[in-house]
Length: 178
Image: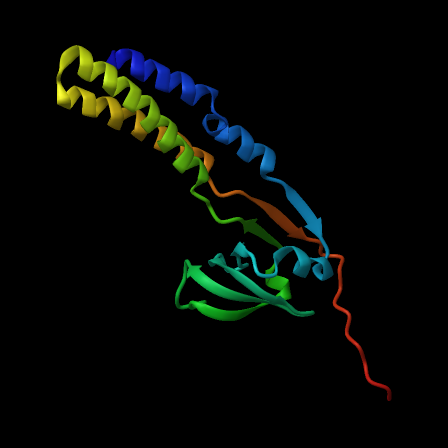
């Protein structure tokens, strides 16, 4: 009976969309080429990963896109001495490519756990009735629930897209009358 429960769990896992998470990730990941002026509507208020020309890697939320700089609320940095956490203005020349990411949700984990626990409960009823062994019945619930959770974890992988800033776009600077 335990073997049948595990087999059923594996079949459900193989058929679920979460099991094919890597396929979805490849389809979702894209690269967009934008001019500086278009950057604000795509990135403002969103989490981005950015590598500076110095090699420092930053992760944070875009606060504003100004004509000469990107204002970033830095949450993670690979070099705390070069760029500390907090609000920083990144010069326009240092922003050539960035990755916009969406936060991971727990939807597929909850679905996988629920399906796994449901299958495991049905298996536990059968195992408990046939063997009378409480430990085997408990494992019949725990194993499919764990497998369902892990499969759902793959489906909750954060998604995003790359943005390449076109070098041809130049800042518009208004000059006063002379």
